[in-house]
Image (spheres, rainbow, N blue to C red):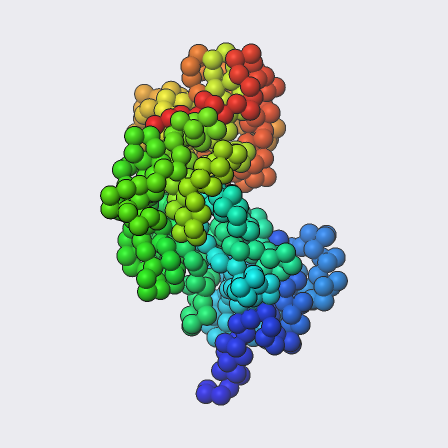
Length: 520
């Protein structure tokens, strides 16, 4: 009804586009109490809002802190909408990324015309808490993709810092954007790793003050998180939202047609440019490779006839950064950094000191001529495919929770080249069936231990019996870890520990040596 409670709440929310707006007494339900949920609650109570935190569980630390910051808390089952939430009557619900579109509380809010935000929507609205010397808040760069998000976020932030900008890697990488927004030191740029879940929430927003990044990129697209989104199309549509309202540069992967189509379909600010990257020779407005040299043909006036050198594959190999998918990430990051005016020399400087995070194509040992590689971060088939392309002929350790994704295509395309497969996890049958159908000549070994401590010990024992001088044993599970491990990092640590316990680092190489990363 016109002029009713719903309309009044919407009018008030439309006016809340600054830290300095009047948030006093706004009734906000915060869903979830992890790092993101707490940052939301902490921000809102600082602004004077009336906050109810709703979560299924709460750690002892957060349960203690919620009343300290001035919020209320309800904890219990969320398979139905709790009466405490209904009675609270929120004007807006702000959900942590784990809450899927079909969650009962999200459905209740949307069906009741209650505004639903994610943490990034709130962060964008209050981004002016700390401004730069020019009186403007930090620029945003958005980075998404099925794989490579974290590495590209770190690379981009490193390049920006080397170029003299105050930049912070935030978002899905582990640091809530709201924490960075409230940092009194202030920043020039937030490099935001953004998940498909967070993008779905951004897609609920409209109006002139919706998120408008300086630059954005979708690195690649492959099926993932289908159980959250409900379909491959819904997942793709969420990823595509990264480009909406971009002002300066939409960076896309020329080798992945889906990302190009996303840019073509995106509603961007007039004057925004499409910048392509891949491992081929770049055209004007692209970054790419020419005779082993990474070059920029996008951000120079003479781009139709000239290119700027950024670094070389040889230099990257010396840093363990020459795997093809890593080079692609570097090119994407360089395009984002160049869009903000970072000079090629600064990009080269940043790459000279950059190291990949643990569990990303990390060589954990070299012994008896065998290289043991931990890519536990390869939690879906697309990521594992990149690892297998970098290490063809490896003894492949694969398996875990498949998250509703069909692994048959990966086994069909990469499995036949493997020397052997060692299958772990609770969903082994689908993997072994895929090998039987698509790579029947590849020896397949199953590890059926359910005890976490035993899984990797048996993996290493099997691999020792298979691998010979010159071989690679590659942990690239193509699946999530939560069936048997606390996280992908826990899975990788246990793999490395089992390797070191069984065979050590050996005299043939350092256990932290990355110099054997493959080249093109």
